[in-house]
Length: 240
Length: 79
Image (tube, rainbow over all chains, first blue to last red; front, side, top):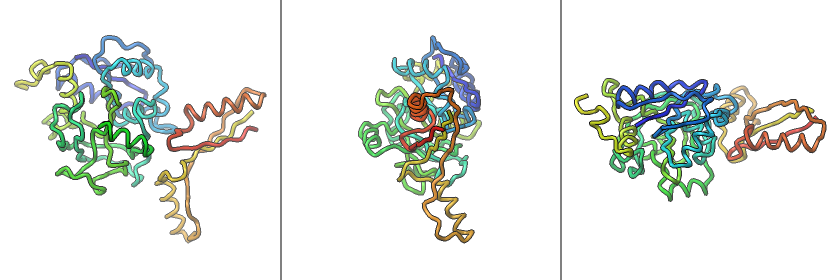
């Protein structure tokens, strides 16, 4: 599987994502500078975390006009797998590839810590290596992760099972106390209606290797790989 | 022509910064200050003398980039 990782000015999780796909999972990776306008031969695209364009104006608001975003949109419209993590999620929202917006965290703090998220829909190309209701421990690191959308859109994405992750307690209870940033309905990650574009605030690339003490995030990447028929043996996992 | 643009959160959208400022004002003794809302102010010079065209341009700027109309509203003056 060949993964394209978009690098915006200010991206800072791009190499972490490349490391996971290449060194941990044995896949082919191409770094894509944001000025690229043609994307060829890719099976999936990652919009990584960071602070694209310094978060000026609003998070993701300027990155969405980067030249590469036209190609990302075309790739997504043809059904290509796109995952946006943290700032990548914010960019997907601003670009309108996913519905809603991010507000400042209710605490006003930049929050960097492990959180628990519940897999609300395990029948997706990003989560099918998890069982439904599975609780994942994955770190967040953001100041603007307070998901918001209008009631009609919220009703639509819930009815359509597009809410993929919700903040929860360690034992899987979705409670206000388990919500780190004030997100509407504890939403931590959503998918588009076609099921090929995912945005999530937690950073699975920071929890994808046993040496880091946590491999929960790896399930997201393994799901993407197996959606392409790449087995764990091909992914270099057996005996690793 | 110069556009002076204000972008603010819509009524009903939670404004955590406004709330924090309101609490700070309260602790300073401004007990009658309420409903503090934080917004953005931008100035843009336009190479345009036709007011209607300038107006249309600024409106497009606001809709496409300067405001996210899901949560924000905008208003502007042309001078």
